[in-house]
Amino acid sequence: MRVATIVGNRPQFIKVAAVSGPLRERHEEILIHTGQHHDPELSAVFFEQLALPPPDHRLGVAGAGNASQLARMLAKLAPLLDRLEPDAVLVYGDTNSTLAGALAAADRDTPLVHVEAGMRSFDRTMPEERNRVLTDQLSRLLLCASPAAVEHLRAEGVPGEAVVVGDVMVDVALAARTRALADTSVLERLDLTPGGYLLVTAHRAVNVDDEDHLEALVTLLESLPDPVVLPLHPRTRARLGAHGLDERAGLAVQITPPLGYLEFASLLHHAKTVLTDSGGVQKEAYLAEVPCITLRDTTEWTETVEAGWNTLVGLDASAALVALAKPRPLMRPELYGDGKAGERVAAAIAELSRT
Ligand code: UDP
Image (cartoon, rainbow, N blue to C red):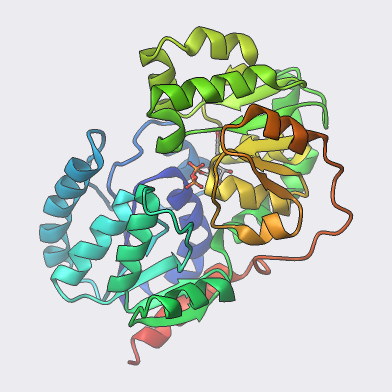
C-alpha cells in the first residue's frame, strides 16, 4: 500500500519514530510535514536524534490562528494528495495537522487511519479535543492506545473499525529509557542533582494565551520549593514576553530552550517530580516512575491519576504544593503497552488493504 503520513508537530515526529520503521517494512510511506512546528528545536532535532526518514514534502504552513492554519494546510494537502494518489492517509494525535489530513483524505474518499484514536479529555473548549473528535468521525481505521479509548469511540457511535494497538509513544520512551538513565550530561550542564529538581513544561492554549492564566502559572512557578528547570516552548516564551512576565519567570526558574528528545528524557527520568500541561509528558513521567502534577483540570490519561502517580491541579499553586508533599505511591501497575505498538499499527494497515 502507498501510505501518505501527515505530521506537523513535536509529539507527532516522536510517534513517527515508532511507526515508520515497521510501516516501511510492509508498505510504501510518503512523509508529509505540514510545517506546523518549524523551529529547529521543535522539528529538526527530532528527525536527527530519532533517525527519522526526511520528509518527502514540506508544506511550510505555520503560525496565525487555528482556522487560518487549518485552511492553508487543506489548500496545500488537497492537490498534493491528488498527485500522490495514496491508498491510505495516516494521521496522529490531535493537532491542526491531524484534522487537515483527515479532511483532505475525506474529500477524495481515501481511507483514513488515525493513531491515538479515542483519546478524550471531554473538554471541547480545547482545540485538541475538537480535532480528535472530528478526525475519529472521519476515520476508517481507528488505532487506539487502550480499551478505554475504544469505549469512548463506541459511546460516540464512531463508524470506523477500532483496534487496540497500544501506545506508540511508549515504544519510543521504552527504547530511550536505558540511555536516559545512564547519560546525565544534561543535568551536569544545567547544574542539577538527580532527584533534586522539578521539571516543568507548559504550553497549552488555556494556560498561556490568557494573561490572567499566564500570570497564575508564573505565580505557581514562584511558589515551588525546589530548583526548577523549564524547557520553554516558543509559544509560551512569546506570551511571557508579550505580557511582560518573562523577567519574573526567569527569576523563579531556570529556563532553557526546548530540548531534544534524549536530553528531555534524561531530565525527566532524574526529576523529583514533573509539572506539566502536556499530554505526552504525563504518560512519560508514569513510565519513568516519576510523580506528575498536571497543570490542567482534565486529562486524557486518567489511568495515571487513578494509580495515584498523577494529580490534576489546574493552575492552583497551593494544590500543587499539597501534591508535591504527597508520598510516592507504593504500587505502579503496568499501563499503556509493551513497546510494540508501531508493529501493530503496520499490521493493522496491512489488514485495511484486504477490506
Ligand atoms: N519533549 C521534548 N523536549 C522538550 C519538551 C518535551 O522532547 O523540551 C517531548 C516529550 O518527551 C514528549 C513530547 O515532547 O514526548 C510532548 O510534546 P508536547 O508537550 O509538545 O505535546 P503534547 O503531548 O502536549 O501534545
